[in-house]
Length: 398
Image (cartoon, rainbow, N blue to C red; front, side):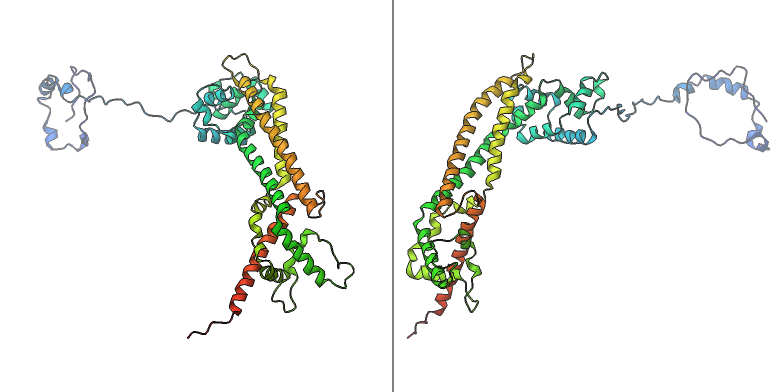
């Protein structure tokens, strides 16, 4: 039996829970209990209206949670070259400083603790990744939404608005690396100077060379070209082990060590008078001189172009700080230049002392020869000493 909605039915006033059943189609009712319903439907329907089912089974409005959506990526604008921007971003992540804190360092402004976080290598990287002229022009003319610039471009935009930003970075590299570079140059010049003095004043080394000359002249008798020598080029000192005895078991150096040990044992310790020769042999003098010349070149560059960094910003203390730095470093560079002159004179003296032309032999080559001679002589001396001990007759035990 089909039921129709009562004309008094009213539409639901609120959403109620559903009864999740499976409906029987009317054609299938037949003699089922459902087919017997209907006589009191209208009465029941009226009762149902007053059961407040809507209130009892009302659907509770679920709390609406704002769906967390991934932050919408801005349309990031990039002006710097990709590689430069990438490297700058890595540096910024490493420094953990804001772009404002970094630019304040170029103004010698902000807290001293923040400025100390930036060392010479950081300024060197900032200089390396700084915008070039074309990029600087694009940044200065940028009229878009600054918030859409990536972090590297944001920093670069702040940099190009600082007067003489590239010179400032070069100056800060100079300022923060100066003490270390000055110490390195001074140490290398001083060790060369000391080694030169030690070689020229070592009486024990002179005695050994006298022995070498006598032995060589004795062995060279009859050879017009090489006999009766009054001296020899020092490169022979590092080549003595190439001249072997007839049985190939020892070298000229072994014979020399044995003779010195036998006749002049007091000079076996000649290396004790040459303590700085090894360190001097490691000094690449052209590099040291180049570093010194670069210090002066950078100093002049900063001094001659410092006016470019002037700004109207009262908080900008860069120019004053660099003027003080230039005064201090100028005196230090002058002292290094004087040390270079005196070191060069000492080397010329020692080279000439050993019969060499300073213009024809490099410092490192010169000291390398003596360092190698010392090392080989000591090794041969130890081998001879060990050999002599094994040949000593054993005492008869009673």
